[in-house]
Length: 171
Length: 282
Image (cartoon, rainbow over all chains, first blue to last red; front, side, top):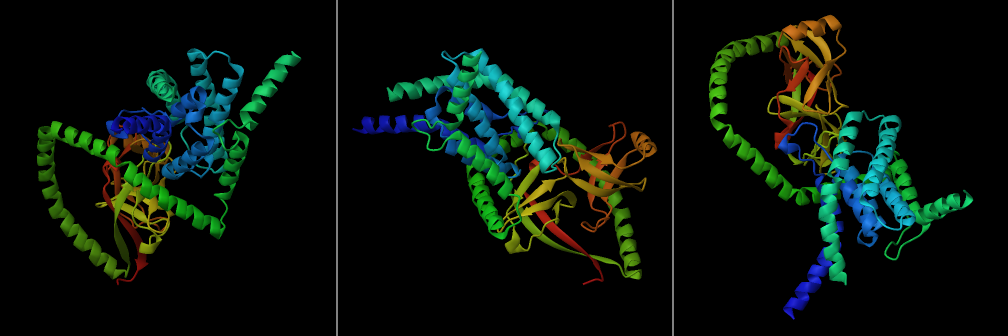
């Protein structure tokens, strides 16, 4: 009986893990600044949303992603709604890729992430710099997108393992 | 050709409008909602402002709780690094202390003289101070700011200065009921009117988004001069937000006019929120 309860708890926990990770990362705004590595920054949330909405869309609801964006804006201190818009555009691209591809291909996904990041960072820069007149550093966006792109394969392997565990538990 | 375009339209429509089994809202409706939120959040309408303050309060408090494990890891890393450099730091601090002792004797005299002169022209700077705890110090690559645990209920107002010890670290840019956000000097949007000593040059210290600042609005010859001499940067008091003479940072020769801030913004724990009024002594 105890093992049955334990297994159902683990199953529920595993299926909610992407959502938990999403909210922890927006509340925490993982920056690794304390490691004092000059010019090192990556956007974990982009990787997380891109992977899960592409490979297992049921694990992350669009409404949760919208709220995660609102939280991220408040924590970072930029006008509310900008991150939500960016995250949802990321979801739109993954939904489009899902609709047009029959068999998933890692390399194509990887380069789609780069294209999507260029698109959403451009939107963010236009809104912040031209509409709200907040001075931003373009280089930070380039470095951030670069590291996010480079680190995607690492997180892809981790998330793939997690996805398999979730899938097996569901089966 | 036509079928290719049809495929694109179908995939596009399906991505934006179709709801999946577990999705309660379509992407298009949420994207439109985000745009509405962006527009609403920038309208100066009281109910919206109250709602914004409420959202900020809840999210800041939750963020403090959730970031506790990360902060623990951060403190552990810092402590480890401190222990590693203990002996080297001890030697540096010892020689620095000797220099400071000598300077203190001279400074005491200058302080007395300054006070006497101010009294003569009947000019006094009064300051109100408030001790605040740093709740969140998220230095994202795009915005350098900290959240403090004092807000409108403690009479915190926009534009008040933030001091770490005697050093200026930033100013208040957003005030909620129980907390507030301060923009750090290292942020790109931070511009502080300053004076460079001993050269006595007026300049604006601007953040760079990194852990150093730069001087702006000075002549090229002055910048050339700074390349060969050290300079200490203080607030100039222009603009009336800060009192003159609050130390900000220093420029060492040969550092390409980079301003090294006196305070380490990653180590802020408690800060003082200050406001200044100019006039007769209270």
